[in-house]
Length: 382
Image (cartoon, rainbow, N blue to C red; front, side, top):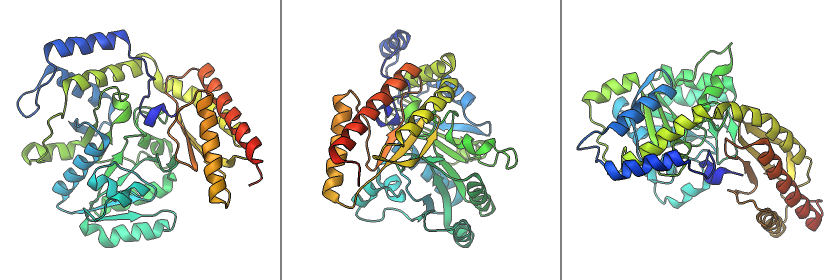
């Protein structure tokens, strides 16, 4: 019900035609080191990606993971601007390697014992919009980029207010602070748009104000069947780095086997009308989440964008009791056939994008049964 780690976006079945093409690639050109030569599969991938990325973007890198993609994007921002500080938002997560992990606000950053990079987290839960804008104004000469998840993913599926984001991005433009859209989780149709940041550009009064200078993606790019991520940059940055080295080297960058999977995913998304299916399913998922919110196990408010949702479990003041509630709920879900990414008290709902209504109904039947079992055991009075 969470597409594993919100990455198996087209389910767990690899079509025979994809298997055949992977086999052909393995038998012809299984690997080419990008520092030595180009190959036709990567050329095809660039053409496919260029068709689905925003029109102002034209340069691409293809590392292996979302963390690597964010590392590369941050390096590009620093090299281009000559500045060092990276801004991020509260509740954000940008990957598990040193710099992306530290600039995020996820609890996992506590495993980084020393600050590996100049960075500032702008906590929107404690700072007002004017305070955030003032900070960028005051420190903009030192800030290379703002990296943001268009929809904060592991932190609870939270989308910023349109005007909030518009005003912040406007200040970034004024102070020549680049904008990095981390689309690792929200990209490739998860929200019903190809890219999560497109959710901000649907307001006719505000116009299309969210135009990132750099954009990173992974997960749904290959549906995690073979590791590959991407960095897209604006035409302006692309031109700059034609004559200025990024200093980026990676053995598996633009791996042809992974490129085949990415090409196949892009083709399938078009052929199977995946975005349309996500928008149809959103209505059904919303109905089920609203029904589930009536359970004492959950708070009534929830978030949903396309097939990207999250509910908040109600916790008691008794830590031991909370552990029991979580363990019971998880055990009941597994008994009834659901394995998912669970980060209590956050309960993510992010099924594959090609789910059928029957599968969604079945999924929520199991969740409801597990919730009812848990409430029956603990009384629901916490």
